Image 1 (spheres, rainbow, N blue to C red):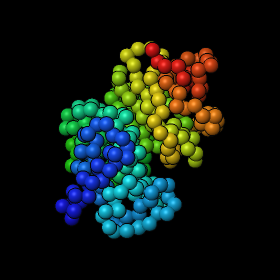
Image 2: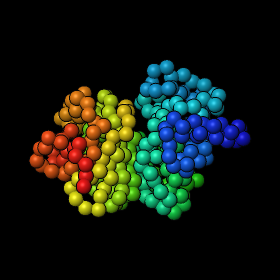
Image 3: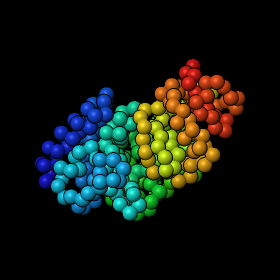
Image 4: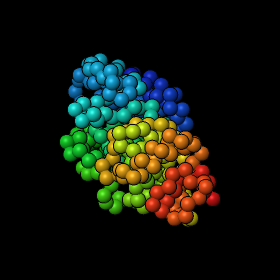
Amino acid sequence: MPDRSASLRRGYAAEIARLAGVRDPRIEEAFAAVPREDFSGPPPWFVSGGGFGGTRGGSELARLYEDVLVAIDRGRRINNGQPSLHALSIDALAPKGGETVVQIGAGAGYYTAILARLVGPTGRVIAYEIEPDIAERACVNLAGYSQVEVRPRSGVGEALPAADCIYVSAAASHPVRAWLDALKVGGRLLFPLQAAHSSGAMLLITRPASGDAWPARFLTSVVFIACEGAQDATMARKLDDALRRGGSGRVRSLRFDARQSPSDWLRGDGWALSTEAAE
């Protein structure tokens, strides 16, 4: 089984890197190194090409090494995410050796392990998972990664550790203040900007050394489960309206300014996603 797994992982990692257009070769290496079966529970595994339609079970190891979602809990509709999407996202987030990554929505820990390999033994990954039983699974699965700490709570309603990267795998209707505040200078936040029960896009924000305009851009369209505590009904409606109008590809900055501007793509309370570039 280990030899079979290693062989499958090498081909899988190369294909995922190709599909995602990965630039950092360390990401392909990390996907090739982490056994997905260690984070998927015992077979039969229930996999799907997207969402939850057409989910089917099976015990063939090769099914885990395709670009598919794997169910963590079918009843709660929780899965471990599409590998090519996470590869694309992690490549954009660009975690480096020795950095601190805060992960919101760790699930059973598969992508936590990949992040851990990217930051290396001198780095740190602090992984939040709101579902206690799934957090417990993650703790067991990640026991061999000394640089990982799993925290069984949401990661929204408290101050977070200072971070070089924050990687969120649950949808927020707005940039969460606690996430922004935790970023070090040069730190990157990547999260799904999406209303609950809707669709959205991955938004990458970088904290500059100074100023009220932070570089920001959208990566790709996504559908995630909602992040508890990070959804506001009024903001969700505004976001859906903005996405229907289009133009998200022109967003260049997150601006902290109470004044409305023609460059606003989406305005919240004291902030706006703007088509104007950060200086």
